[in-house]
Length: 117
Image (tube, rainbow, N blue to C red; front, side, top):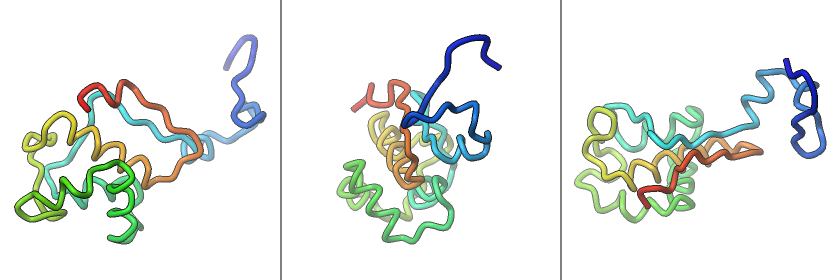
């Protein structure tokens, strides 16, 4: 709990919001992206597991990663390797951005998420 002051989102004090609601409203793109040893589709869809393939592709387009993904040997089905080892730093960051955009949060926090772009 805070001792003084407040943090507001769209004029609403976050102390009046449930923690679950707040977590759903915020998306974070970390500097050091966590990727799974699965395909690109899975790694982006992790942002919202109920998303359709088309929604995943739209998020990748918005993150300017779709065209690059289509150059991979198996496109969206290409395995990225443990912690995204097979991707460049910029590609990993764009996958993380797409993942966060797919979640469609009200607030997006970028922790040096564009340092390798």
